[in-house]
Length: 298
Image (cartoon, rainbow, N blue to C red):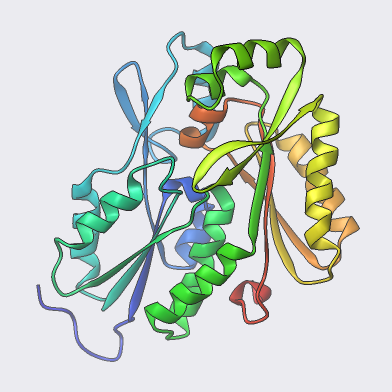
């Protein structure tokens, strides 16, 4: 397929998947294409954030007897997207959720081999939710500035080394069904009111520490956050919640008031990630921004 020539052509397109949970207006403003993953209730598949909003998902989750499952975008959707982008762009960077919890990275990579005339780079964020979104926003800003894809990827790799996220779930049964805890651990944990602090390690969601009570767990997470924030370096952070907007806003205000060097957003665990964590979860993700980061001015 012949590309459009001329000065209007932009070199690098940015694509991410829906688990970045970028606000729609932010994705559109930054020219980021978002491809949806699916949540499946009783055999019926819904594109998250397109056919099933986060609010509707949690309502449905409370009333269903069979837990939903999830699936990645079909290879054909990636190919169709790439074939559209090749008309305007020389290259595309696809930023996916962690390859340890989804095959989206592998599917995007395979689809990229099927399209001619477009250099496809697939970046494994090794994380999800708004921290994944920060990679997409950084890449989009660098693309607008005319940076080469390999230069953008080097920046994203640097950010990845400086990104951390910890979260606490409300119901251990979701972790049990997802294979993160065995039945005995889930039962004992529930009886003892244990609140495991989770994080991404080697691309997987795994327990970081097991703490008694949510209050103690949050004190520990805030301690971990303080270790990075107190350095005075600029930090971009997001409080992520599973249908707990009031608590998320309370935490956001606390972090913003405590650390003048931290820019704090609120994000959410949408349907796909919420399927695995359940309602009521809460977390903080953050990145110590490199001095050259475009997010410093966004």
